[in-house]
Length: 333
Image (cartoon, rainbow, N blue to C red; front, side, top):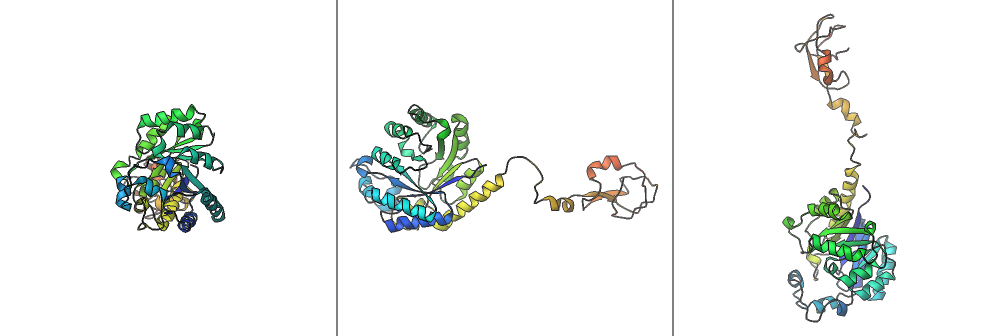
């Protein structure tokens, strides 16, 4: 298995403060994430003035106006460039999700490695078409989706120039936090089999167990929200990892990558020294005279495994002792 792409989702957890945004980049870099991802939008293009916040956002912020909440979290184009420069300085790659057509056009000038399509835009045909026409690789989340939604989105991407080999679908549940019983990790495999694309997982559960399990099931991309402090004000902090948790998640995923191996069942180099210690040999159960027949009464099986394998038991039974044996002495043929 290749290296899993780990996207540390800063999102809007910067609260509109560049110092916090830089702190998030510091944390993502320290954790060893591959990318730190922000969100790019013009509030006027994203929501209508009367759009309300989701229940989890209201619970977190007390805010009922989605427009007012997002306006405070908008990053300017110059701020994007500053954050990109800071990412380069810290050795972590910059990424952002566009939420409107103008933002797609802006991000397209930044030569990012790929597009990240959020779950909320999967039914937005003009948005999907604009991204597909760039010819760049695409990672698409599928929260709030069924198979028909995914198929329709892929059709929109394909008919506007995207190719299957450049698309990764992220299984996702868009509830913050996601109850464990609603995760349905096995759906990731179903998506891979049904649509013939690479798959990954965008996680909104509490803790780090589920994204780690997703890697064991074949996820090639993991996306996870993080924050500097879950007690900060803002819509997504409560369902985000704190810096040390993010670091632990990255470390665990890298260990899982090593542990998955190549699928062949062989004796590993690390266990070879234990083979002789743990396995057994055929030995004398009692004193045996030379010329005496070897039977189930006078031979037995004990550690270590540096003699005749007990798998040759039937071959040894009935043979004649070529020498005198004392208890626990290795039998020879």
